[in-house]
Image (cartoon, rainbow, N blue to C red):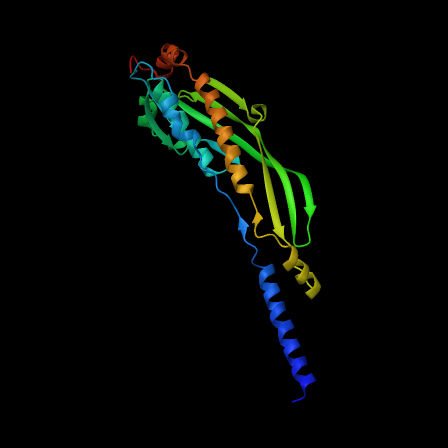
Amino acid sequence: MKKSKIVQILLISFIGILGLSLTGCASRIPVKTPTYTWEAQSNLSKSLKREKSSNLVIGIVDPETQTNGSKEFENALTVAISEIISAKGFKLKGPYESFDDITYRDKKMIYLVFRPKLELNIKAKATKRESHPSYNHYEGVYTATGSLILSVVEPMTGQTFIKRRINLSDLGVSEKYVYEVQKIAGSMTGQLIDAATAPTELLDTRAYAKAKLENELYKKVVAKIAKYIDREEIISFKPDILKLKGLKRF
């Protein structure tokens, strides 16, 4: 075989191997996705002031939700409301998945029921975009809008005794995020550029930022709820609730 022919074969093989290597490299830039661990919920019990015990039973219903937030956030709110009511000295019943799940027997026994309604919309707003040879870099900010309405009702009649609304937009919670996505070059030249300029890893903090935003939102919402639930106000409704239930005593 002629020397020129051997060189040609070797050159073609090398280019093929290089192409595969570059293509593999382009598809394998690792993406760092940090995770966020909630700390607010675990500290709630320690921060609550314990008040005098009462024999009145308060029912808890899971939040009625319209949200693009996480189930963890919804569950945390239910737990927080339960712990706050318990700290106020009341006995607890539930949580029920919905108001309709409360049995007639339970409705006769329960003094009042807390029915939260959560509307949460976490919005992403882009603030920056950079185009690099091998990837695109995006920055933005998450904000929370919506409301939490906390209704306290007598379960037999559905009569509302307390209704508080927390405007989530007013709480001023926001969180920045970074999102980087790799470009896939279609030509050999593009792959060569990718290999020379590609970072060792890309970054995606969207999940982290969303979880952190929910955690900060949780803390501020729970602080509001703790102020809205007043032990003496709840006890003061007893004469009216006795009339509604048609009972002489609890």
